[in-house]
Length: 159
Image 1 (spheres, helix red, strand yellow):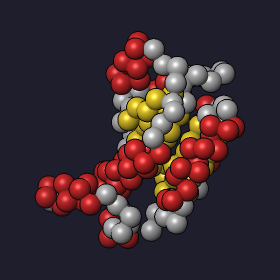
Image 2 (cartoon, one colour):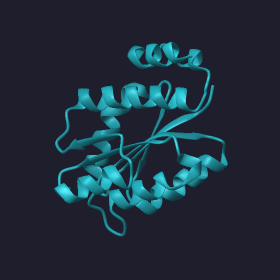
Image 3 (tube, one colour):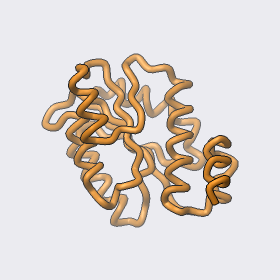
Image 4 (tube, helix red, strand yellow):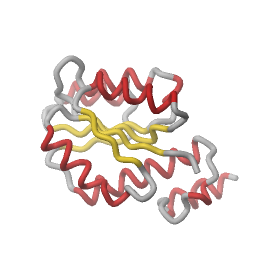
């Protein structure tokens, strides 16, 4: 079974902790990782890749020092190692223009405004990781009990 990670990035520790707590329900099959900056997230993702681990989902705040979440997500989208990594923007301060850039340049898979609904975030993460497993060509049977059944059925119909 491949080691799958969800990397969460926010420069506000309390928000980062809240996201991680909402995703704790997945910790029996996913590693939920926390980073406080875009630079830390990129370095951590490099480490994971070097260790043969996978970043299934990257959840990022938008307004952060040094690099914005959109800049981070765009950089990840352009890195061939993370071509299947699902990208989520979680923010309370993105403008309409920022959102368009996130969609067009970063290819985000989901957008949430703060405060988010924990159940909706959990559902989105389950769906995105399920899609990631199939897009990476992993043996879905190893994860089947955790995956979104609608995604599993969709991909099985395509086989």
